[in-house]
Image (cartoon, rainbow, N blue to C red; front, side, top):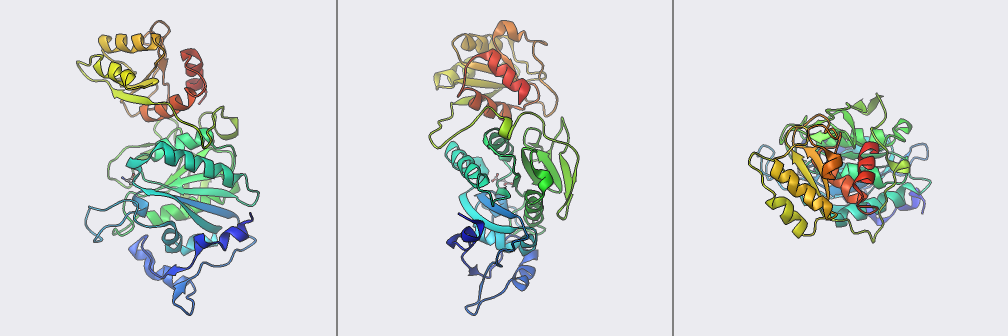
Length: 377
Ligand code: ASP
């Protein structure tokens, strides 16, 4: 199906001229779009000179709305993809855009069903010769997990750019419009190819393996503490610094399809006085892998480590990560992983270790092979 055909489909059917994504954008949006006789706003026709970018919306605060522009309470996933596209008409000068609604949820509710649907759709779209790239709007809470998951299962080197916002669309100084504009600019940039899944928020371009959310509320929440930024972007103009960390995309060994059932992996945080009860409970609940958000360099009490090792003997893969925001978890440092049968997460935080372990367990439960995956990805 050609982009021209898709563009004229019902997905971009004209909507009423109400613009929600940022209150400051509303007058601009309405002024720059052509009103039909019926008073509705129609998207401009495709420009054959522009790249074709598909926007997949999943929800999050970028699609959130509050009752007033100064209150802190709001609901994620209220604004549909068409309103999102129409709220930033400037982005239509960067690319021919059309949208699809994958889900409309707060990303705290992200789940395997949406992940598989999203990954399948991204792969389908990127296989179309006339699709240049994809933008995915998402909540900030779990964007790092979804980005890393897609980084491992998208079979294309075309740009996949995720974006989000910390403030809802109705807030004073909403950050969604510029984040979305920058994400479209990056998806339309040929230099974004081959860099894996990118996350563009607050003028920074992060790699999927490196970014993490560091503030519960600040607009400048995302950091790439170990390896740094892939680049920056100022009002759509990128500055590229480097490629991504780890294997991804076309070089990845992992894939999913509509029938994939991802194995259960639980994360347990290590603390003072930790015992093995939660480790054993996770295995009892059907976990095929357990990630410990360890203290320091992936450490835990001796009793917890023994419980993890005992589960490893029974085939439940134990990964040692860290609850500390930055730094590597080294193999065979304070813990003898060779003896305990455990895996060191190296540069991956607990939530990304869980993503890699779930995909790895589709192929093997051998700790040595899984350690190799942690080395490579
Ligand atoms: N709870 C929201 C979400 O992750 C937060 C956000 O998007 O900033 O969907």
